[in-house]
Length: 301
Image (cartoon, rainbow, N blue to C red; front, side, top):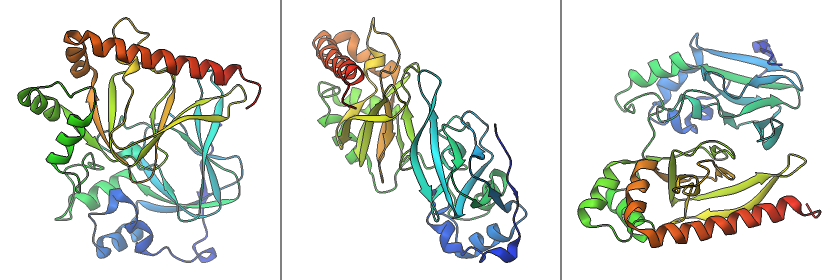
């Protein structure tokens, strides 16, 4: 059951410093003075949560981000069988809830966060953040509009596409079209990118950083299948013709990752004319399914 936090007695804790907010990518455009105003504004509150209280719930509308001032929380996602499992633990100084505010996302929470100890958080309302970003000269185009990584240029994107087996055969004109139809994303560390069982609508290529591919065992514990790095791609299996159309594993981002998101219709056009690529991807998929089955049928978790 979702339980709202209670107001916190300000005398019980030291007022947070703007430096605490400056570490959050969404707030990078804000000058120290703007961060100070955001901290002092009506849209920022301190809330306490008791152990086992939910702070946010998966699927909810994302109306705020949170910074942990004291305590500890678990990040939890729902498995294919409906059970909820913990995938990360966050402590004082960590933050969460930013992903749902990004313009490239659905606006819904992609995980639940639950206190596992008495926890004090700083809650920053979506509207207050949007106003702060809108009134700074260095703002991003929209709230959370960090779809691109400022240190990744067009040449790097094209090199990433060229290096991929998926797009190696494209002409220069076709490459430009794929590049124009793609989006750069910089997800938060630990952000869930794909969920097992969900319909597939895109694939990803890793421009920088890493991504963990994992499933949940019969006890609901995450089991890593692979860790992918720069140049690797994932998410293509759900897009293959005559396939299930569903994700066969989960994926979450590592630290400081930059990804290129490519819509399903782009890959569909490519596969229509490259049957050898289709067969190669099917062989990769069969090996993945075999590994997943082997992991889930093993007694040695």
